[in-house]
Image: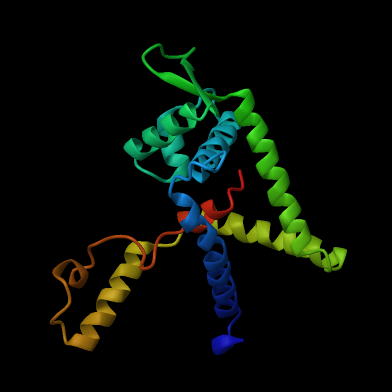
Length: 202
């Protein structure tokens, strides 16, 4: 167990999973005319489906929050999904000034196929596990995800720690101004949303 802590072991395992799941994602981000559906389309389909279970109406703004992207990016992704025939834009029944988003028949079918494939894949990974181990893993992973959602990482604090470490090494000189004062934002190596989207779970 690296550094003798449970947290370090979990950290290494999560990093390995991110690398494994990010490899195919990186290759699939570029639009491939030979692929029936782009990964970005699938992400939007998942977001619209999940939000439709929680909200009276799904809007582009809600999709932006769900995917953790800015509104302009969400608008582009939604338009792509609409163009692919997976999402439908309709007039809102609540506010005529805005539109609501729903899944088309094709979108619902794609969602079914993706969810079925993903769950089959996960079952195959644990095929040689004892039932008790699979159940314990599912229970603890769900508990871990809920804890992470309830207590998001403080990336500003991480940035400050990195800035302090750089200042110690360089004696306060040579580091970019925005690094020395704790600015710049974001987590080194990317934020948490990228790994969550690798295998959409909603």
